[in-house]
Picture 1 (cartoon, rainbow, N blue to C red):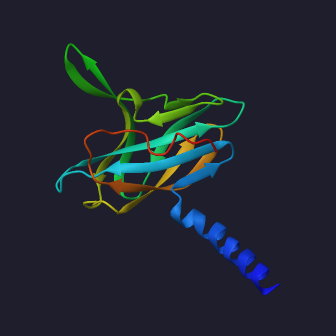
Picture 2 (cartoon, rainbow, N blue to C red):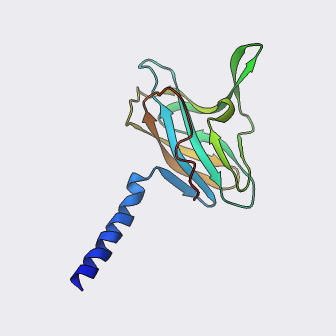
Length: 161
């Protein structure tokens, strides 16, 4: 009996601790996976943010904005190449999240631009933010700062939630 209680208690502790280590958030039918910011040079005036969004619902939704107290403002942008010159354009309509689909804020040059961060953020740091969806509403998340790597790819969006 004591062994059974020990196993049940250990299982409970394991399950209870998972959210502390996981880097995903859920708002209704929207799963937010691995919000991250790439480390920028020490004097950078902007930070690039990326996140995988999975709409498990039957209705389309839209990421309208990202807010953060760690930057003067956050803008949703898309890099567009015209005549060989890359330009960033605001995503005034936000980022579409079709029903039943996974969308990566990072595809096709999309990203969140954290303008005038309040300090230099190094790998391992966390940046608080609020994602604002058209239908699902608002949710507080944490963008984790990661070292700049050779290639930017979606976080852990390959698994279903």
